[in-house]
Image (cartoon, rainbow, N blue to C red):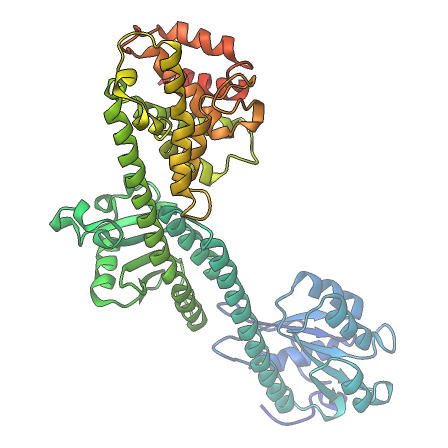
Length: 530
């Protein structure tokens, strides 16, 4: 490449000039937009740009012959790296107006703008540099091929640095957003699935991967055979790995599982040509591996962002494990209390288990019907079943002579029996107050105290009516009565299913919440269809 003036008219008469941009190259080139109303400027610029390579990439030149045409091209091609811009085109200040359009209207601060002018008097360098957001100013009379080459390399390097900063910022913003979203989750499986989704979004690849852990790190040690404690199991799966039944690792591709096992063994992430196997070690020394099919080789920026992401989410696994342990402790307490109540009233058999199951299903049916959406959230659905088994815990205070009497109770005995609702609610409420927020115990207190209230206000112990009765108690009221009707008790024979359903229908809007009755009957119908 010589150092002759690039735009010397005397030198161009006899040259065989290309008519368009640069020759085709394998792989995407840096996009350079040339805006000039002189055709020979495009030709000469194309010759110089044909020799430009930076970071292993050539240049793809795009031509525009007016500021208006340039606006249309840049609006549809946001990844232009450099603009070589003439000042005087369709108007004396078309180039300067184009600069304002780019920076102010498009808000594009990334593209590097090099102003080239053959009429410096129309746009004095000092004024233009101060008043317009351009990155270089060249008079065509001083611009040689070598200077254009040097300017182009410097501009591409600057653009690359700006894009790296921008991608870093976007990546970190995604990590912050992902962390905020993930840390609201209270389910280990949902959290693990979210990690895969957010990793895919961070790397801009399809969601296809699995997230594995050692079984002993996430399940109670005494709940597992010793040989299974170190086995690898799948916490979450997506995309092509989603069909793994019950997340059993035995059906996974052996090469994938070998990679995951190797990562766990060496404690280091592995980056392949089209995948990553990410090692995540939590502060409490639990180990997780996220295997993601990327379809491409990750660059240095990708790997750095992934490592930052891992540092943010690693603590989430520990927090969820601790949360799960607290939930298990609560569940153990609830089961112990329910067993105590059933020990006193052993004729109910598995009544409380059926109430648990049907209360949960009825709540789901209500949600599917969009009933009480302001109440039935994920937490409600998670707690209603377990809390329902506490509905009769107050019976621990009822004398055996009344509780196990084979015949009907007399009025005095019935008055004593009715105290179990208020007593059960009070017992559970005292315990629930030791923990903030809604828990199995606090919802259990609502249910114990309220499951004998009536929709029409004629129930006990407080005579509440309608929606003043907690929804959890209204659900259990329907389930409890139905199960009692179809079960054998010391004082009665079981009713037929048809008779029990007719009773619920006759008491809808009187004893029971009509929407709850409808939801319960839908559950019965679905069970009959199964």
